[in-house]
Image 1 (cartoon, rainbow, N blue to C red):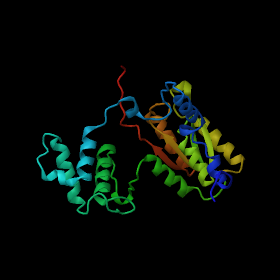
Image 2 (cartoon, rainbow, N blue to C red):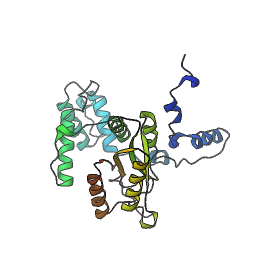
Image 3 (cartoon, rainbow, N blue to C red):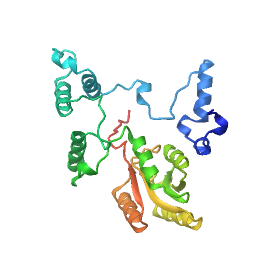
Image 4 (cartoon, rainbow, N blue to C red):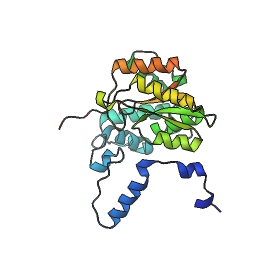
Length: 255
């Protein structure tokens, strides 16, 4: 029988602070009538941020395509209707069927075209994998690159705790490098080298480096020179780069 005593020790040791002890205690206080404001996770809709109507409308039409047979122009915007039709044309079996493991082809092609236009470099749809969220992508990559108990992933400090928790689950090592708070949370090459050398001295094998840009939780945006330094550092030390850039489209006003 499965119980806490015979759970995997790796699962028990995985510390996912986003939903850890502090959050559990906050929920207990909330049940006692205390007003709690949860700022421990990126959850803007919980603070009344309005969702993007375009995304919601397209998803609604994909889930219930019979609506497209009716006059819905008073309920849905025309661009949402056209996009839903184009997606369903590419997916005649609908959105409920299993897709290829890497994701539906037309979507991967669209992503490749977007990356090519945005970054001005060619992107190959055959080298793109779609996942159900960035966390799932990171977890899959970490699972793939950690082969031995001494393999480690270089992680920024502070960082989003999903990375260290996943490393614990797969039996890898967290190799922290400190961001330079005095320099707007940029990466410091000296700090990277110190973390790398310390790991080597402790018989660990750094296999990759995670770079979060814009930073989570710092929000800092890395400079061009900083990014160039990171790439050169990774090349020199034969490290793969896990580039977490999920917040790059987030723009906030000062008010």
